[in-house]
Image (cartoon, rainbow, N blue to C red; front, side, top):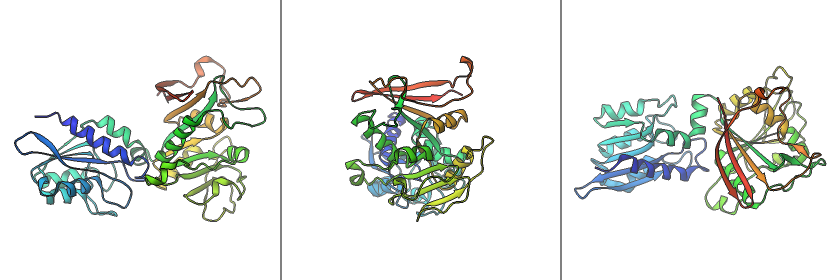
Length: 364
């Protein structure tokens, strides 16, 4: 008998094809394996490509055809049991006559949440969950965060010189990092599906916050949602961040007239008088945003870290020194002792061209 993890790893690899296309749905892959006496082999496989289109199980069943009867199914997420934009995958698996279903994780979405497994078991199909669970949760971290924590997964991206500077005193910052690092950022914007910034950054740099990679259109990537946190509604209607091509959100603490087709919402202030960051993330989760890729200045970066809202930190370090007069990376006022530091744990380091990409997560 072959190792079931082999087939689940293949399902996870398939699911990863949807990193930049499935929002707001989870990334799911499916493999159907049958043993006709000569050893187990894949007879059908598929992955969920984008919301509103068939799920991974449907593509795999189409490929398997009649060979699905009596076969084992390896899927990275519990098969759905409700009618959404597509019919229930649990029903399709039952109709196909599969023998067993191995899932990496259960689906916490309220309309599923164990009901897919229950429906399969009621039809006599054996179900097992937990195979390569950690890997599947990492792949679906945004979807799971939105459903389980009611806020998106938040990645904070920073780019700096080796002495921790992000711009010259004049504000000049293009470009600190090289082409490979900037291409990586564009890819991560697409995978997150939403980019968040502050009014300070928009007023200083007038960024587009779009994905400008040649392969983006060829691979069906959509432009990420653009989100601006703007306590006093200072961002003008002429800012590039409001250009069409994606959903745009203007989150403020005062009423203001939004540019055409920009969704404007007034949220609560925190005790310091700024826009409440937890309230902003709850609002974005309610708008079906799974992941947020934050590209902002030192003030908002520091606030996100202080309020423990950062799930992952990406720092692109360029082999340059900008000097004492250049602008700093993060503002963390109030830290007086070494013991007050924000503790991080390095999880990855790699070279991108001449730059260094450091991945870290805040310690609990």
